[in-house]
Amino acid sequence: MGVRCHRVVYWVLVLLLMPGCASTRVVPDELKPLVDRTVTFREVIEAPESYQGRMLVVGGEVLKAKRLKDGTQIEFLQLPLDKAERPILNRQRSDGRFFAIQQDFLDPATIEAGTVMTIVGEVSEAKTDQLDDVEYRYPVLIVKHLHTWRDQTDDYGRAYSYPRFSIGIGGGTGGRIGGGGGFGIGF
Image 1 (cartoon, rainbow, N blue to C red):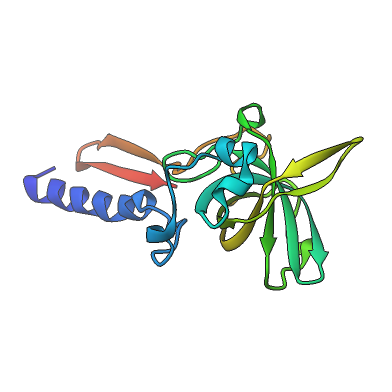
Image 2: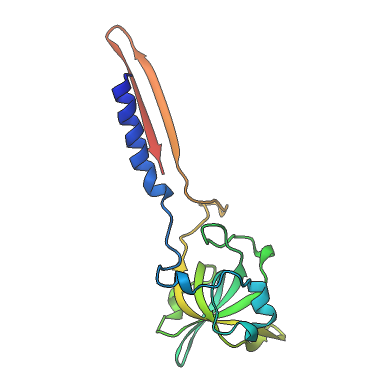
């Protein structure tokens, strides 16, 4: 291949790979200045009343959802967030459960157990509710923004991280008349 062809291939690769590298906006721009990144979920679960009114970004897996008179309550198992603010799918690293209250109507049937979300929410008072045979004190977040992550497992239930892409390059000889080559990109 000539220099010109290499440049064309380079720019094609750059243009094709850019969307896969673009960051997803988990926290809307208008909420970013309001988020308190100095407070951890562990601190909130220990003393929710000390953090009332603070805006947090918390990850979690939906356990169940139910309709309330003035909104929808979603019970989450908290999960730590990675650098992209995507929950890390490791329940052993959870610091506990919490309720997220969506004040607008959100049909609980549309929120399946196991759904992974990142929540931007304002810490409210704690709520005590039954968890099996004991009372459990749930921190409550008033939802300002919900970000649902698409399924992060393959067909066999194995977790993988995004983005996933591969590049293949091939070539060959074409006998008497010439040769050939090519490349492919998969996402």
